[in-house]
Image 1: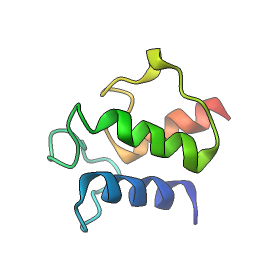
Image 2: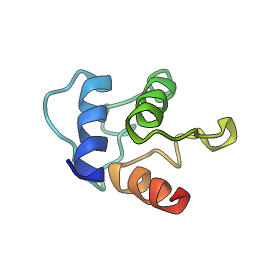
Image 3: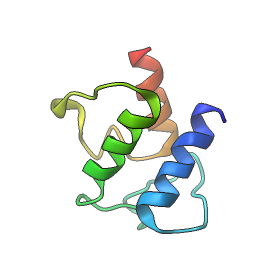
Image 4: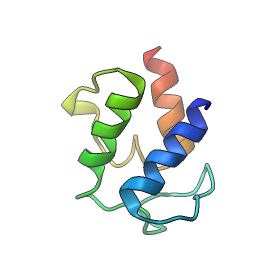
Length: 77
């Protein structure tokens, strides 16, 4: 499974929505996530990619879409 697929699967699990969002779609504006779900999603991403995301990086802006999450992870590689 590639990075985008893994992130998509995490978003689907956290949101409880079986439909996959478009990669560039805002996860917050579209209702997939809210600010309460963000920490759960970040924890799942940390586990899946075996990384530690600093608390200061946990903002809706950085995790607004699957593309942004993938770009963030790429920048940390």
